[in-house]
Structure formats: C-alpha cells, structure tokens
Length: 251
Image (cartoon, rainbow, N blue to C red; front, side, top):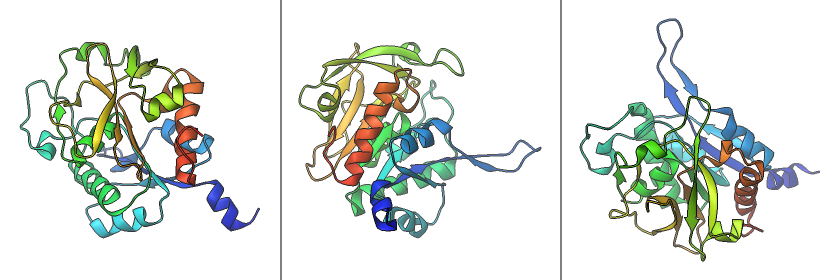
C-alpha cells in the first residue's frame, strides 16, 4: 500500500488531553485515558494528542492537518467560560490552561474548518458552550448519572429522535448508555446551529448534532469509548472514522 493510500485509510483524529499538576514526587504531566486512543485506533483512525497550550497559532497548526476531532471527557469547565457564576454544587474543574485551550481549540475547529466532530461527555458540553450555549451546573437527578465507583459507570436508557444521525446508526428509538457526569446541556440555552437528538427519562439532553448538512458534528453525554457493549462502541467510532474518510455516518 502506498503512503498516500495508507494516510487515507487512517484519518488523523485530534484528541484534547488533560494537564495534571505533580504532587511533589513527580512533575506536571499530560494525561488521557487509554480508552479514547484504543477506540479510535481500533476503528482505523490515527490518534493525534493535542495538549493544552496558550498559543492559538499552535492549536491552529495541529488542527490544520486533522481529518476529524474528538473532544474528550474530564472534570467540569469553569462556569465563567459560558457566562455563569459558580454554584454551591459545582464539582472539580479542569485545569485553567486546559479550559482555555479547549475553548480556543473548539472555536478554531468550528469557525475555521469543516472537519467532522465527535464530543464525549465533557466534550459534548464543550460543543454546546463553544457555539454560544450554556450548561446546567448540577442536575436535579445527578445521583442517577454519577458512576458507581472509580471503574464502573451507571447505566440507563435514552430516547433517540427518529430523524437523526444516532437513529441512522442504531436503527432504534431507545438505547442503553453508560453515565458518569453531574452537569448537562441547558435546553434553554442551546448553542447556535445545534439541535437535541437524545434524552434521558427525565428529559435531560443526552445527544446533540449540528444542523449544517455540510458539517458533521455529534455530541453524546455518555462514554461510548468505554461502554460495556463492544458493538455500541465499535459502531459509533467506526461510523465516525468513516465520516472522516468522507463517507456518510452509518455507512
């Protein structure tokens, strides 16, 4: 296989990663859970890790050669990022450098490119706030969505809009998903050019997609990269990688 064909077969997929402070026995470091890298690799993509940086031009340089972007999960974004003040139930926040870098990265991806985008959990929320939306800082039913322990998520059902990319993929109006979050997209402060396509039984938004037919953008509140159903995981990431190759979602 020629180098050119090999590049087309393995589209380059950006992944934003965490910045973590050392504890005195180790230096500051970057971090990403293996599930994201594995899910993209298994689906045929080439993961490109993008650390949080302050220089906008560096972020543009990374984005310039990407075929797709996955915005990953993590702790909360500071509410100042979407025009709110901190509420008492707010939890831990991502590092300030990551918060600022993620926002700049998302704005570059959405405003300066047409590459496909997949947002997962916090990344799903980033898609909304980067397009002018807001978040609910603490859900009334947050206890139903937090993970059971450090390695095991909770699970619940979500309803899917019949005319949506998720329905095209799963061919079902209801699917089981995992859950590990306490915030959510605010249905009264939705991002420009986005629409809700999945909800939990309480009406919280679990999935969003872009309205522009020329630009694929999907956000899911759950974690398909580590869901217990391997077919679910493979279906979402394989479909996304195919979109990054130029195919239609679900082909």
